[in-house]
View (cartoon, rainbow, N blue to C red):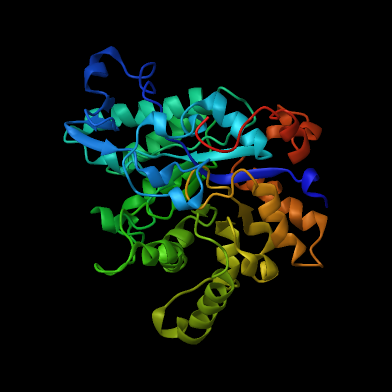
Length: 405
C-alpha cells in the first residue's frame, strides 16, 4: 500500500478549549458562574472556575514547534497553534496531516472531568459538565460532520447521574465517554466496586465505549526526586495496571458486553500482559476463584478492550499476539508525542518493517477498527475516495506546518 492511499482515524487527540466555548451552552441562571478564560497581567491565559485558576500548559500544545523548544511553561492562546483551539483551523491541520477522523480528549477540565467533580456546588458542576459536553458534541464535532468522534465527560461523583448523562449524550449521537483509569486515586471506589454498575449498565444499554486515558487518575508512577523523563517513560504502565484491574474485576462478568478503550497506552507491552494473565489464570484460578468459563482471560481482553499506539514498532511486529482487530492508531495532536504533520509517513514506517503485513491488516489498524469500536461512520457523510491521505492533503496546500500560524 502507498502512504498516499492510507485512511487515518486518530482515536486520541486533544483540544485546547477556546475561550468562548461556554457562551452558547450555559443557562442564563448559571452564566455568571461558568468557567472563564482570563488573561493574567504577565500575559498568560488561564481558566478560572469557583475562584481556582487552571493554566494552559505549553507541553500540551506544541504542534508546529521543534522539540528543542518544548517546555512546561504556562502559555497564552497567541503562543500556540490556532488548530489547537479553533475548529476550522483544526480541520485544516488534520488535512495537511492526511488525517480523516479524530477523537479529542479535553484539556482544562482534565481527562474525565475531574475539575467539575471538585466543584463545591455539585449542581453547578453538573450544569457546566453538561455544557461542556454540548459544546464538544454540537460545536466542536458538529461543525464538520464525519471528521470527529464525539467524546463526553461523566459526572463521576454520582453513578446515577453518570447513567443519565450516558443516555443524554447517546441521544445526541455520542457513543464514547471518558472514565478514570483508577477512580480510587480520585477518592472514589475502585474499579472492583459495584458502585459503578449504574454507569456500566447505561454504557452497555447505549452502545457506549468507555475511554480510559493515561493520566485520568491524576496520578503518575514516579519517585518524588525522579526527572520528568521517568514520568514520560512510565505513563503507559498506568494502563497496564488498569487492564489488570479490569480483567480480574467483577465488571466484565456482570457486563460481558462492556467495551473499554485504553487510550494513549501503547501496545508493545500487550503480548506479555496477555500471556501473563493466562498464566496466572491457569495456575491460580483454583484458589483465587476466578472463572471465565470456556474463555481464557486473554480472549476476554480481546473481546472487551481496544488498544492504540502512536509509535510502537514492537507492537506492530507482534500484532497477531495482541489481536489484529483490537489495534487502533492515534496522532496525539497537539501534544509533545504527536507525529503531526508527518503522521502518514511515521505510521507507514511501522508497516514497512513487517514484510508480511497485508493491506487488509493495515486498513484495520488505521481506520476500520476505530470505526467499529467507536461507532464512527465517516463514509456516510464523505465519499471514501475523498478520505485518503492524498485527497485530504490536496485540500491543504496553503497550510503551513511550522510555527503557530
